[in-house]
Structures are given as structure tokens and as C-alpha cells.
Amino acid sequence: MLKIVQMKLNKNSIIYLLVFVAFQGFSQEILTKKEALEIALEKNFGIKIANNNLEVAKNNTSIFNTRYLPTATLNSGADYRTNNQKIVFTDPQTGNDSERVGNGVVTKNYNASMGLNYTIFDGLGRKYNYKQLKETYNLTEIQARETIENTYLQLFTLYFQIARLSENTNNLKEALGISKKRLKRAKYQYDYGQSTKLEMLNAEVDVNNDSISLITAQQQLSNAKRGLNVVLGVEKDVNYVVETQVDFNKMLVFGELEQKTLANNSLLKQNEQNIAISEFNIKINKANYFPSLNFNASYGFNRTENENLVNPFGARLITSDGLNAGVTLSWNIFDGGTTKTRVANAKIALENQEILLEQQKVTIKNTLKNTWENYNNQLFILKAQEQNVLTTQNNFDRTQERFKLGQVTSIEFRQAQINLINAKTAYNNAKFDAKLIELQLLQLSGDILNVTF
Image (cartoon, rainbow, N blue to C red; front, side, top):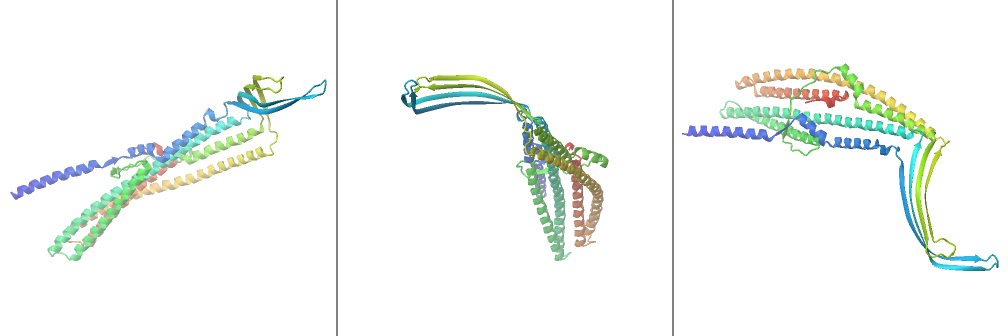
């Protein structure tokens, strides 16, 4: 009867355990690479700022910021005056003087005018300014692309760091489980007098060390997930898992990467845009050598009311209105050399931009070569570490069997276990390091935004 009850309890325990494990599995959300990328593109703070900067640059290229449209002004006013006046009259026949005094003489004045101004010609300054603004917009667009590229790389650096720590944590959990079984075995052997207490104490120390390593790895994993949340721009619970599968791009060819880098690299494209902006800056400054032609027109209305006149011959009401128009030609023949200095400095700035572009090309080509060699070396290391895992796993399995038979010491068993953990950790590091270097190559060549997962 007792055995039947135990069987029922064991069966119920197994069912409960399966339900609990399933619940735990469903409680952890899987954050795929694609989902993480979509969230970052929508929520990342840096990308939001870059998009706002792009909107500002777009506004600057509007016709409302090019000086091609005329300007119109409307003015109006009212004036009220009250004065004490004294007027002396001289009779031309008699030569006698007479005076007229008025206190509180009121005068009211109303006026309104509307003016229109338009620059017909300004030495082509606004034309080149408009083209410069368009090049500035293109520069801002490239800067926004660079921000997104950097966000891609930062995102996947943290994502693969989480994947790396997740696999390392699983390895440490597995190692801790093995160490606990060893401790249990050592306690049984000690209780039955088959081993010394030293063996049991060594096993306890190894369990404690493995527990500490696991707790440390779990803390690092939680910190990495919080770091990823910052890049994603969201407040997300850290109870999620990531994909650990890594696929490598086997179609990479150095020659093609080099061509794409020189044509599409964000830093080089920005330097090229700076050169174009500097070229237009020279033309804008040269526009000051030419005359400017402006058209202006205005319509005005004026009304003056004199309520109390000291002078009997004065008008009590005066009104006037009319249209005025004209053209103004101005030419600054000599400005003390200011324009000449600005043009000369603009040419030097252009030369500096061209030098900087050549320097960037040399630097980026060198970086590309170093990264390419590093990538190939890392792929070789990955294959070697993969073989090391197979070898150390085989060695550990055999050592474990021999340990159970009492043919090897606990120290030898522990060393085999440590070798396996180190081999798996080195393999994980090599795998994710190689993938990150691959992404660096794609960033240099301007292809990182075309990565699909």
C-alpha cells in the first residue's frame, strides 16, 4: 500500500514539475534580433534626436529660408497731442503786432502703411546659399545614417553579450549540477567509510566556488540586459531570453568590401559633403564682389485732425494716401578687404577638407585591413575552440567514468571539469567575437543596415 501511495506521489510530483517548468518557460519572453532591432529603430533616444536634426535640416532647405521670397511689412500708428500755443501776427501796413493764444490745442494724427521689398539680384549669393543648404541636408542625412549604424553595432554588441553570458551561465549551471552530484557521492562515501573527510570538504569547496561563479554570471547577465534596455529606449523587465544562434556571412570578399567602403563609408561620405559645402561657401563669399538690385513698393495713408486752431488760416483736417515704388542699386566697391579675406579663408578651409578626406581614406583602409585579418583569425580560433570543446568533453566523460570507478582522484576529476568549462567559455567568446567583428566589417563598408536576421 505504501509503495502505491509513493508511486502516486511521484507521478503527481513529476506532473507538477513538468507544469512548473513549462510555466517558467512561457514566463520568459524571447527577444529576437529582429524584434530588438525594430524596437531600437523606433525608441532609441539617439535615433530620435538624429531624426529631429534631419527635420531641422529639411526645414532649412525650404523656400521660406532661401531669401527668394519678398518681404512685406505693415505699420500703423496713432498720435494725440495737446499743446498751449502762442502766435504773434504783424500787420504789414501798420507794423503793429498782435497775438493769439490757445490753451489745450488738440492735434490727432493717424497713419498706416504697407511696404513690399524684393531682392532682384544679389550677386547669386542666395542661389549658392540654397545649394549649400541642400548639401547641408545631405550631410545631416548621412550623419543620421551613421547614428543608426552605430546604434546597430551597439545594439548587437549588447545583444550578443547577453547571448554569450546566457550560454556561459548555462554551462556554469551544468557544472554546478555536476559538482553537487560529486558532493553527494563524497558524503555517501564518507558516511560508509570509503573516503576521507578531505574528499568531502574539497567537494564542498568546489560547489561553493561554482555557486559563486554562477551568481556572478547571473548578475552580469542582468546588468547586460539592463544595458540593452537603454539602447532599446524602453523600460523592460530583465526576465527575457535572447537568441544564441549565430550565422556567419560566408560571401564576404575583401576586394568587394574595400570598394564598398570607399564608396559608402559614412565618415568618407560626410567628408565629401563637407567639401561640397566648402565649395559653395567660396561662391557665397565671392557674391559680395557683385552689386545688388532691390525693388521696393509701399502704400501709405495719413490723417491729421486739428480741433482747436490758433491760426485761423490753418487746415482742420488733412488726409493723404498714395503708392510709392522704386528700384535701388547698391555696389560695395571696396569694403576694406573683408570679402577678399573671407574668400581666401574659405579656399583654405576647402583645402583642409580635401586633406582630411585623403587622411580618412588612408585610415579607414588601414582599419578595414586590420579588421579583415582579425576576422579571419577569429574564424580560425572559432574552429580550434570548437575542436577543443569536443576534446575536453570526451576527456571529461572518460574521467567521470573513471572517477566513478575510483581510478582517478577528485583533483583530476575537478581539473577535467574546469578544462571543459574553460573550453566552452572560450568557444562562446570566439563565436560572438567573430560575429561582432563581422558586423564591424559591414559597418565600415556601409552594409550594416542591410543585415537581415
